Length: 167
Image (cartoon, rainbow, N blue to C red; front, side, top):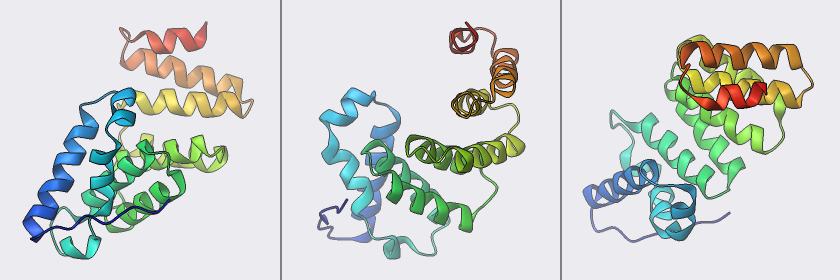
């Protein structure tokens, strides 16, 4: 997928637009994402060279990858998550989102490796167990999927999603 470049007068304007798009992404539903693709596109058109050297460079790649993921451009999202990981490899959310993109592309073994890495970094992050359980279920690893769903429930017993998967 190719993105149309947006003209920015200054680097600050470019960065501000990207941050706005990322904040928008985190506060909206999937339906709202589809309705406001222009805002998400804004997150992916800023050239990385404009922010090279900034302290949040790896976060930019992660956020841009998330925007690409929401737009359905999973292969490109993976490339951005790869870059974020190469810049700062010890973030569970980078591995988790890369696993989500690989999961959608049916690259299940790779997705399982990534989400397992995310769990090793942040073992109390319950959503990673849900994702790994789903992946393992699709790979016919039912006992391991059940163990992941139970771990999800153990960490967050009030969340119905784990119980629904076990039903």
